[in-house]
Image (cartoon, rainbow, N blue to C red; front, side, top):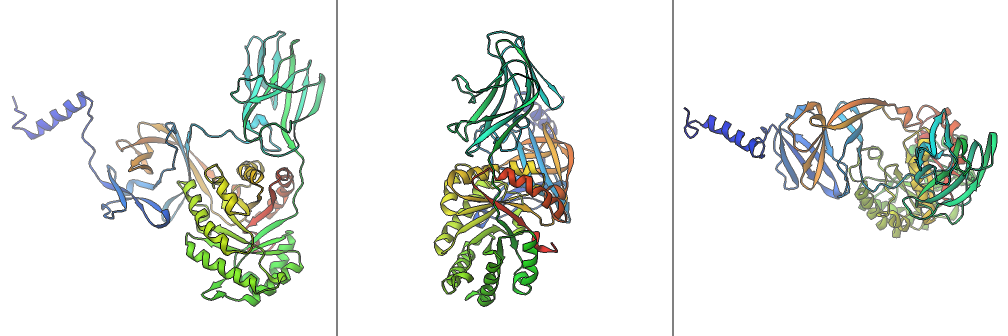
Length: 552
């Protein structure tokens, strides 16, 4: 019989068997690459997989049992709250190019245990946001669907029953109402209460008995708390009866602001051919231009040309704002802001710059950001130092992933006089949803919010979906105090962390993100979208990102 002490191979086998038997697991897989997370200046963070171990002191490194060429992409995982539940799904949006697969967006579900309920935005049917939920016993009430109608059948009785819709947040908009399209036997009651509350529902109205389809307009009480999760309930009458509900839509008084803004990103556009720029701008009813203003070592590059352009624009009802690009260099921004203020100090009013808009550099606008909150704070740090240098309004143009929660909301209102949110959507309902929280921030803090529609050329992308599994092509790998997201070319097991197996791959067409090349669709959507957004008191008007690049 072999003696394990004299046979190293046999000893190793027995060691593995004993370790497995007592729950210690097998020895770690052979290291074939190095996964690193390295920090740089201005809070930058990079994740990479390499064949050689990084030696920088600013890098956290672990080994992986895969070759570097087996990795499709590696990025920092989205930051999640400490109390976030275990993730069960990942959606990754990106595109394949010469440098491999570039990740643009990552969504982890569930991202948080305390995600706020969605906004019930004007123009939206509550049933598309929150599916009806049966209240009371199924013996008293039965809930069904008939095409686009929600059907409630109630037996006679005193027990409270019906269906509930919620939880949703009602936006801070005065004078709102609910439009209900229905037919009903007897008087069904519509009530509202705080979601999860123990108080009795507050009666809003009793629906009229109607054998044929009719419409009811139900005003919402002015004291109804905004931004508080609410639940709307449709309650059965004591006599029982049949209700068919065809619409449950939030409505508000609306006024579409006349202001429209656009970017004049290329300085040559206004310096060499202002007549063409004015023609394009007036074709779209532009009242504000965000112009690239070249700044040299000793101030503005050509102040006299700028003065003439601003005066000519003013004669056409167009206000000129200076556009500054935020590339993370706060000192450069400060020098440009001081030069703009010096220019204004030496010019008559009609030739002065009317404001400053700071936006992310174009190549940083639609890139993946693992920690939006930290990114927002760094931007506000730079803008906070900028504001005292300016003698004019300061606004920022931000992408739709930018946060508006309590961690940044008050500070944004202190630093900024206005905000422009660039929505990378073209479907009107998606645009409304993507900008609602920004408009809510503006309404609460008395700040103007413009909605910019993307018209810059972008490439098609794809969305890959992954579900939690024992092995997979996507992995969340612990890396120091955070996590890295790895995408592999093929499903693997044995990596540290959580595995997710790939499923559906759906195209994300450029036409769903940008109006570039389809100005007819842009123009067609402005009317209805403007009426919807015009219900918000904070809505300042539309802006067009990239529209003035070519012919009108």
